[in-house]
Picture 1 (tube, rainbow, N blue to C red):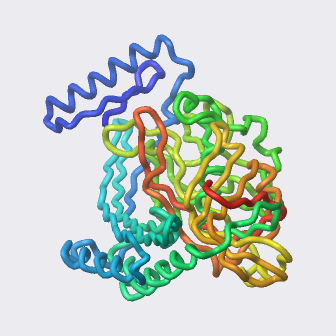
Picture 2 (cartoon, one colour):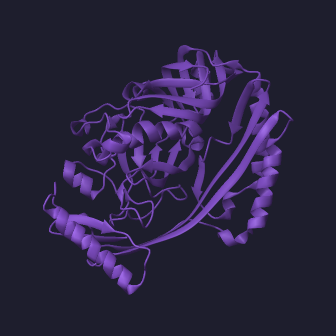
Picture 3 (cartoon, rainbow, N blue to C red):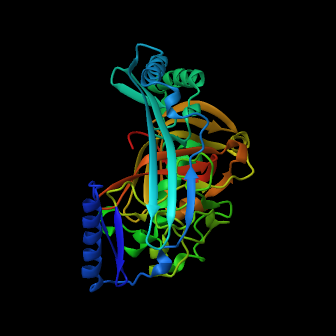
Length: 430
């Protein structure tokens, strides 16, 4: 991918022809596009939008991908699939893993020279149970939630097989469980569901290019307005959310974004107040608002745009046991099953795989088809307790989609369990 800045405008041209002639043609194409579009530019770009930096980043790993053969990994996944099938009523199982090794080398005529190397692993295991007309699924933390930058030490196969047996048994439990009630109740979300709640109702609405309207044609706008930053009470005082690509091993960690901006940890929301958006140096200049180092591309044939990276909910002081003990009537939900949110990232409803009723401070019945709905700002202002650091977990997804042409990119989310007061929960299909 070649980027050119001409007459204050930036344009791109990608090529798979890495010969001298191919690279020159791509550079000429990018320069021609920049010069042509500069006559119609909405905003002038300057040298400050492309910092001059040098550096290197390498994913944390203890063992490379070559420490296990494809046949050995496949054998472990087959064993995991067999561990899921704890009964003849388990009619379908899935056990999969994706291993990606990638390198990005970014150089510029201004002297920037950055090389970043990643080892990324994602895995998914699930069991589908059926009894008559009733079908239920239980997975290990929902689709593609187990994502990490790591080597093969990521896999603890004995623990994986044990977890698969548990998932299979829980799928059977769901076949004969009661439906989630249709009520307004206290709601505890496990970390593997918090990841999607953060992603959809904090990550996407805070993207500055979405607020600018760049994404309106494909994925909608945002309810957030430019003058909300520094003023909007996005959530209760317990809500603290950071952009942090510096977390070791999290799925979207890096040292520089793809314009050379050094990645640093920044608060997006602090004590419930919205402070900062997810916007690159370009979007920051266009809106006159602070942003972060999140100018990212899905690959060599896609120009970078504003993207999430690691968006983390900072831990509180409560344990899960303490949260449960504080609830008189409520529901505890785990593992995402379905999601729906409007174009403004405002009204939403999410479905989970597995739930337990909470009565008088105790987990009781298993509940099937658990769902909940809400509106972003009132929902986060209902945040009543936040789990402690020891109970915060790292998750992520390689499938965050955005842009035209579409870009699928990796993102990470860390969160503890959280308790929300007075949420509309309901049963049945989401």
